[in-house]
Length: 187
Image (cartoon, rainbow, N blue to C red; front, side):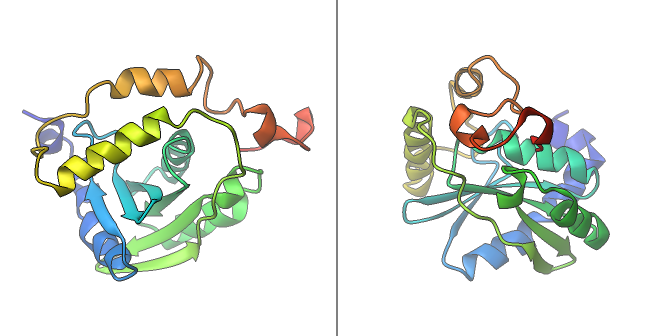
């Protein structure tokens, strides 16, 4: 039995995909749900060279926000879609750290999606782009019909470890932390 068959919260999150897909497609984005085949990426949206990473949760809004921050090295921006208006508003209002303020927040309710806070590009950084190029090539292969839906993106685990440089996602690069004092850093 797969996780998708056994995990009711995952099934509820899957119900959020259709309204999010419609929302992003009306803005000219191509939408990829679980494009890596391992549930690491919930949604990736792409328009031209722009890549956005979106994590979805019906509940546990804090957890989804942290997941989005961990995806920041893969795209131009990240965001979260949550199933509760109050949770979405709390996330947008309660996260004031330098990284947190650029995370987009959407309230997904029924077939509707409401932007609570639009995503912004991350502060510039000189991180390796090899993984992003590999992900883009994978998305291209999906577009061409060469990658079946049940095939996993190989090497994802090692890329995740390499991007983290052996550190937790909460540890910023020096450029991201520039201007912040040790006591004022927030996610």
